[in-house]
Amino acid sequence: KREREDFVYEAARLMRDRFLFQEVWEKQGLPVKECMDIALHNAGQVMFRQMLFAKIVPAIKKMDLLSDRQRQRFAELGILQFENWADPFADSESSPSGAVSARL
Image 1 (cartoon, rainbow, N blue to C red):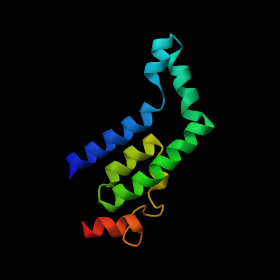
Image 2 (cartoon, rainbow, N blue to C red):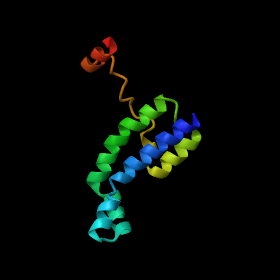
Image 3 (cartoon, rainbow, N blue to C red):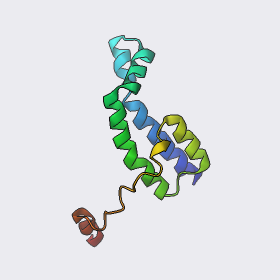
Image 4 (tube, rainbow, N blue to C red):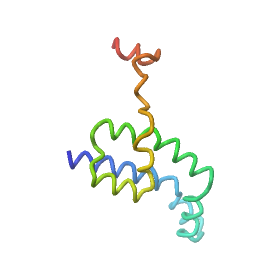
């Protein structure tokens, strides 16, 4: 279980960091730390991360991969607040795509 938690954490960290555009700032010769901080707090980027992790974190919790250790790490990433949001897969059985996948 610990290995799966580590995998999920690394994936979440990479997803969050990917949208800070570190490589772009480096390639453009811009001040990387300052630009990453701007991207981290940009309203559009904040909204995007909220939409992304509002789906991911509840699913991780449902898979029982949100231990106390994981909660602490997710809090450091700034994504733990989505822990108790609605399960994005709760209605999948009643949706048309859920009905199709249930038959497959």
